[in-house]
Length: 363
Image (tube, rainbow, N blue to C red; front, side, top):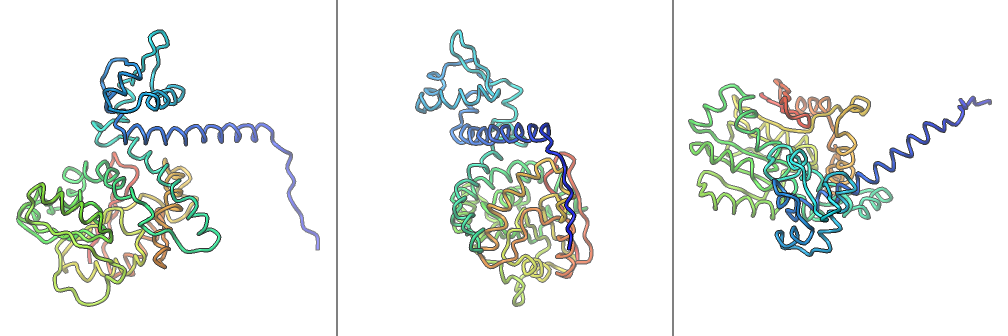
C-alpha cells in the first residue's frame, strides 16, 4: 500500500514570523503577571493622575519595599506601560493607560483580568497530572478564585445589571419593585445578588454556592449593608433536579456558573422545577460557539480556552462531572436548555460586552 504525503518546502519566513510571535507571547505573558501585581498592591491606583515620581516616593506612598517597586516599574517601562525620565529617574503612568489599569475604571480595568494568568500557573503541576491520569483539580486548590471572580463580575455584571441586564426581560424591573422571589445559583461572593437586594427591597433573594468562603463573604457583605431581604446558603446543586421544591421562584439567575457545574443538565432541570410556570430564568454565560472553528476570531479566545483547561473544565471533572468547559457555546447551551424542558430561549448580547451572552429563558 502506497501512502501519499504532501511535502511542502520549509517556509523560513513563516517560521521566523512564528518565532517572533512566541517571543511576543513570552513578553506579554510576563507583563500580565506584572499587571496583576500592580493591581493587587494598588500601585497603579497610587500612580493614577499623579505627576512623575521616583520609585522611592511611590514605594513610600504605597507602603511597599522600594527595591521591589523599582524592579516592577522597570518591567513596565520596557513594556511601554509606564514612561520613564532618566534625567531625574522618575516614572509616570499616562492617563490613557491608567484608564485601563486602575480601580476608577469600573468596566475596563484589564489588570483585573490579568490576575487569571498567575492564578493558572499555581495549578500547573496538578493540571499536568490530570493530563496523565485523568480526573480534575478541585475548587479548594484555587484560594483566590472567588476573589478574582468577584472583581471580574463587578466589571461585567454589576456595572450593567440595573441599566442593561434587567431591561432584557420586559416588565422585570416593575415586578422586582413590587416584590417577587429570586434565586441565584452559583452566587459566589454574592455581589450581584446583594446589589439586586439593595435595589429592590420589596423582593426576597436567595443565593446558593458550594463554597463556604464565598457564602460567608456574601453574608457578611449583606449584613454590613443592612439587607434583611436576602439569605445565602451553602448548597451542592449537583442533584438539583431531585425531589420536589417547597418554594418556587419568579426569577432564577446564574451568572457565569452553569458550564463549570459537575452536572449542568441536572442544574438546569432543577431550575426548571424551581421556576414558576410564568417565571423567567436569566442565564449569563460566555459568548462562544460550541465549534472551535467558529471561535477563531474571538477577541479573547486563547485566554478563555486556557482558563477552561486550568479551571472551568477541570473543576467539573474533579467532581466526576461533564467538564463542559468555558467555551461550551451557544449550540450546546441551547441543547441543554431544551433537554431541561425549556421551550422559549432568547439570546442577547450587550453592545459593550463582547465576552458574554445573556439567555432569557422561559418554560
